[in-house]
Length: 329
Picture 1: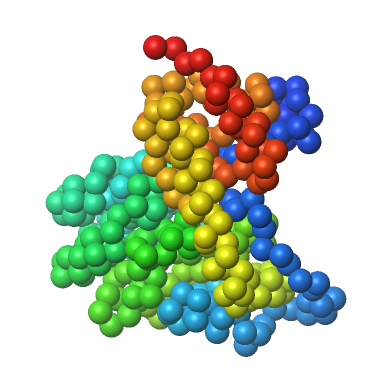
Picture 2: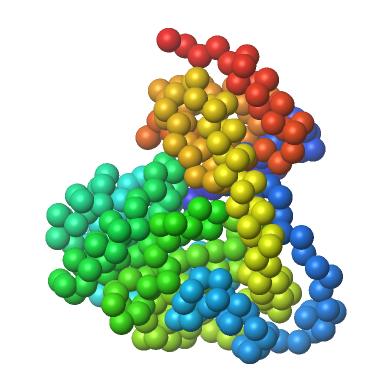
């Protein structure tokens, strides 16, 4: 089992600090959750059914009806590798490690490469990446992804793109073309956990050809997503006013966060987290943790990922901690 962000109870126990005192900046989840409306009690009694409007709402939001509703995009991360013959897969590294583990468990061999150009040059049938990247926050232009998908199509390969963090700044999203006539070899994963702050609902989507979707549906079995989660997801996807307001707020907040981190190293940002490249990753992580601020460290790559504070008191605590940080030379 891989280690992930959000393990706040474990951190509270390890550092002997009450849970309520912590600021969790370790996940990249929107700290202001989508306002969930009251749920019809029948949602808890009835089995989930297609035709409740969720698929239609998702098709409008993502611009693509070639989709399958998932119990979080993690279901596709684990299930997709089984749909391909065992080959070598090039992945842009570092990346969300559940992807790598899923392909390796299914018997594929991975080549971890630093750029999309290197991945294409490697000649592997399939290329896997996160855009924006998790954890580096580096984002590739939409044109580069479409060009890569076309090159892979010509040699019978596939491009798999995880767009978990793209919702707030969707200019480079390629989800609308996934599984279509132009690029049937493009597969895209999306999730409601990050932008909408609904990680606990466990709702995601995969966009691909009908053949891939049908096979993955068989793997998942019936009723993969609960009725209450489907209800909440549909409302969130249909709430365009909330989405527009939230995009502006998140972009402004991430720019503020990047400015706070900039004196301590090289900063890259998405709308939901910033990543600090520094030789002092372990020192900074420990420094924050002893002040009850949980971040996410990637020591092998010299990266510290920092999510957005949820309110002004948290911003002030983070700013004060950064202002007092005295890093070694």
